[in-house]
Amino acid sequence: MKPSVVTIEPNGHFCSDCAVRGAAVCSSLDAAELREFEHLGRRVHFDSGETVFSEEDITTSFYNVLEGVMRLYKLLPDGRRQIVGFALPGDFLGMNISGRHNFSADAIGAVTVCQFAKAPFGRFIEDRPLLLRRINELAIRELSQARDHMVLLGRRSADEKVATFLLGWRERQVALKGLSDTVPLPMSRQDIADYLGLTIETVSRTFTKLERHGVIEIIHGGISLLDPARAEALAAA
Amino acid sequence: MKPSVVTIEPNGHFCSDCAVRGAAVCSSLDAAELREFEHLGRRVHFDSGETVFSEEDITTSFYNVLEGVMRLYKLLPDGRRQIVGFALPGDFLGMNISGRHNFSADAIGAVTVCQFAKAPFGRFIEDRPLLLRRINELAIRELSQARDHMVLLGRRSADEKVATFLLGWRERQVALKGLSDTVPLPMSRQDIADYLGLTIETVSRTFTKLERHGVIEIIHGGISLLDPARAEALAAA
DNA sequence: GCTCAAATTTGATCTCTGTCAATTGGCTTT
DNA sequence: AAAGCCAATTGACAGAGATCAAATTTGAGC
Image (cartoon, rainbow over all chains, first blue to last red; front, side, top):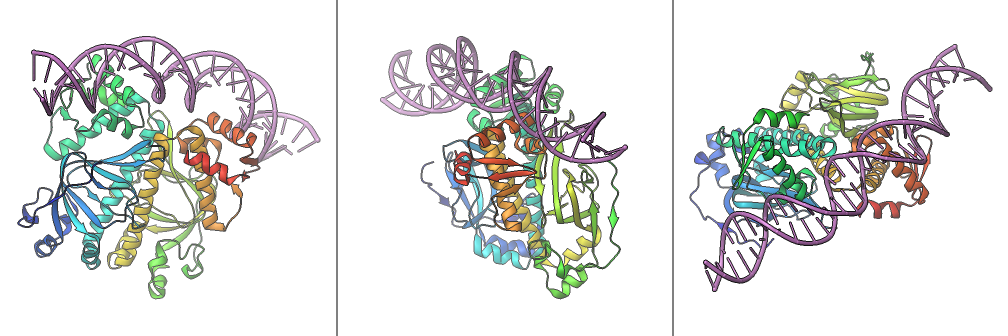
């Protein structure tokens, strides 16, 4: 939204104690490579609502999300928006073949990324097939998720969409922070609507309905999943 | 649909005069590698309607489409279907990280594929980073297409969906067979509906409406694009 | 050419979700 | 605490596309 005010920590971070080490691209590197890799990336912070990169921008960097949540979206000429995904710690952004980003990304809440300039990163990959393999793995995983989301967008009802979203989001939280039935939802209702191909009103009504039926409880900044089994049933339909 | 009757040409085909050489994965191989590669793949034919592989099947092979069209789709438990793409000559199928296919694929009309057993193909890639790079490129391109399709499914009207589909399909035909305003549509209306997240009736009505307005002419086995400019306008909206 | 089945088109109606509008709630600023 | 603002909720209504149903066209055998 607003022009980015970016804070670059000049120095003093180490991959070896990186929060996402193991989950991220860098999991394919050994200790020696990691030390070299360290010099390629810079930690960069973004404040809530800041845009990290925009669709059609020339790709100058790749990004490894370290902390926070980002929304990834595409806009139609008339302003309609489709959120194509939410990025969480461990996600790797910026791959493309056109040399331009094919979606926009902005921070939902405070975000920290590990930013790599495109050229040196490309050179680093060159003779590290394992890293390329890892990147390929991530791309294929995303492709699979994208296809799942197509099914949701094209063939599921509003109720199913919302239930599926809540369960899927919880799943990701669990993978990141461990099991809990309290699901934080840092994104707005509008974000959820644009992710599910619905309107904000329909999302809101569906949340209310789920709450009335005792499936969830709407709490500040998220929901509490009271009846996971019923939610699963709604999602599968 | 029916159990597959597969014809394996025992021998006598050569990558060097393969129709998709250059467009496909193999474009990254040099002459020497190609000769070795030749022994890995077998040409296999599928008749119209035959299933090449099914979602959740253990992945035993990769496929390079040589001729024909395939529909790639996912089913919900209750039978609703979402077609996640159509595969044309040059497309590479079977990549996944779970070891299982994450969609089903069947032949629309007669199809020829170049089939590779998973293990030897994996070994062949092992020490050929260029091939891996090429596969990665294809995955990333598909990912980009998948995201475009999410926008269509989530945020476009029926008219826009159909117009976008016709233009996109024509584009692929052009890339494959050269420019023509006659667009063959080998897939059924139901397939188109399941690709666009619509019903067959809506697709049919939209075709009729486009024809009434002089944008297309519905011809045997396809359409003729009478007014590409107006179609573009409808698609962009 | 004739028959039967399947695909497509067309029509009538319904309903889910969108649109428009007003209200409520939460948070920040003063 | 009051004012102002934005996000979220709720209500009333409308419409795009789905559903149900029937007619028509197309294609495969015979």
